Image (cartoon, rainbow, N blue to C red):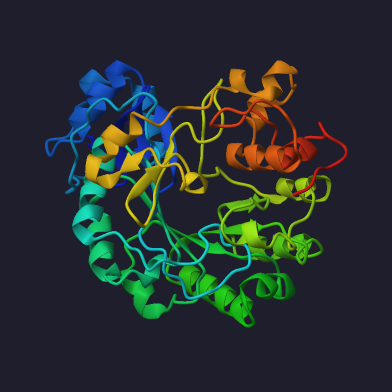
Length: 398
């Protein structure tokens, strides 16, 4: 009997040896013996049972990581990742957009986009760095002038591809050729709340696009911004998303960047908005590790080619794609929880909260005129998260 690694399973040499199920977005840690045997299973000849334990084999078969049939799949070279590993790459392929949302953190589009050769180099290097998730963003990514060529590159890579979209350009033709594993739609309320933020008629169109994506077999998720006009719509959204069987619902609070720098009137204070963070569910996008804040394994590539630790830090990039992803990633410094005010006051939920959004925390700290001695990352609290966890009962200005 021979065993073969499934096409959607990818071996990753991260901080620990792992096998990643791209289809289900699951990461499994394995020991060295198991990893060596799985490497055999990834060859055209497959792996034999003599080098494995029966329970482990049965588990891999039950999880769909192993098959009895030969698999014709490209297998990238597995080499040791940097430490910390770059697992999640937010790739802003263009800043062009077909909407003018009140809360857009990108701000006014500059008609920037990354060329196909540069995108190809980024994808190659991210795979070599043992990347797990590619988050394709904009602007509206479907407005990239050569999106079709970019899209054709995607299926060949051993990481999960997620398209972030407002849904306005999704149709049957695009869905038939789309080379991603998941589509995340921005849904910022029911009809009133969503249209208030994104424009009349946009809610009906995005819901129609979500249904079409489901009918085409895509896994879909949703992202929602808390704002003053959707506070009474979260229960309805919960029912709606459950009916659509979405896999992940990201709920976030406003961050003073882009359009919100000029007009924050849509924002709600942390003591009101914080409680709505609990509606979200799923794995999220910016995983971390013990002792570190949000974004330990995340980097963002902006439409002008700059690379920052997060898209909110676009004004302070660590470098540019011309230098190579690996070189720039080595300059991105992780946020230690020990450096945060939360740690100094022995916050009981610091490991669960991880300091919240570090950019929002530093900006809110400045807005509230606190003299906390911020460094470049800010050591202040993200008050939305504080209010969500019940650490702060009265809110601050958004």
